[in-house]
Length: 185
Image 1 (spheres, helix red, strand yellow):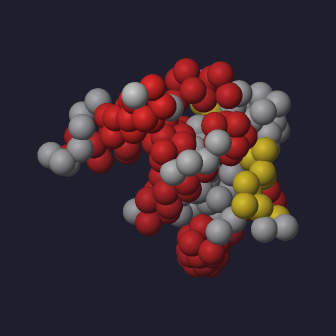
Image 2 (spheres, one colour):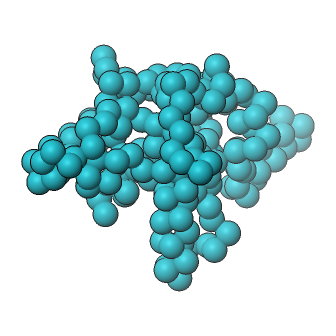
Image 3 (cartoon, rainbow, N blue to C red):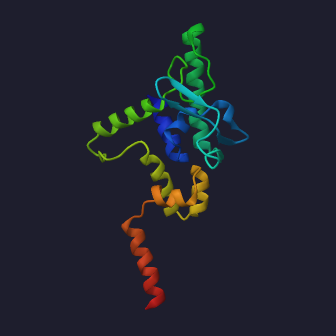
């Protein structure tokens, strides 16, 4: 399912929580940015929230050409489905929807991600959907992006970003040790 693949890619790219992925609306894509303003969660029924999780979570991030291309493909697919389903299509403003237009629930993203992990021998069974957020943080930090910029990108505080999401690798530990050795010795 290409829409599901794009949901994971955009989630990884922006370090989105699953509720933010599901809450992404077309109306929040404007002026060359994705505005993270809404979440979707499920208790017994789908609950739509007109706000992000925290004040820091309410953010906007630039849309690069690769993301813009994914979004254009999603929009084309939705237009095709709208035609196919006719008056039974659920017109919503959500980016990630079922073919009939109903928005994805966060549990669906989690469940399908688990199936992907379990079906691949190459992937670590300990991986969870939320690890995409940690991967986003770690990739950006290891590329030299300041932790405050990374925290702003994912919509969290610097403390939370470093405490829960930043992963170090042995190469970085070696570089850190070498930097100290160069200074001291």
